[in-house]
Image (tube, rainbow, N blue to C red; front, side):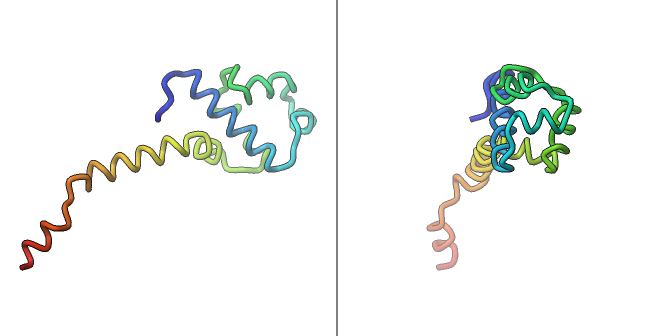
Length: 105
């Protein structure tokens, strides 16, 4: 289900950032040491409690050595899948394979 409000967006982005950071075996303290970001700011962002700019996300992605799009792909993976399923249903939802067999008989 797509995010209902702005807060949901921040939570999803924060969860994606935290997940990627942990996959790289980095702590918030490690990120702080590698950047000018304060540990408290990183924590707030990862919990979806603070707004972030696109520029901040790009800089953070560079620190994590990932493509910035990975953040969004991970944050909204379920939403993308749901939208794709909905599009497929709209396109093929009325398809009846038996009607093809009737035409070929």
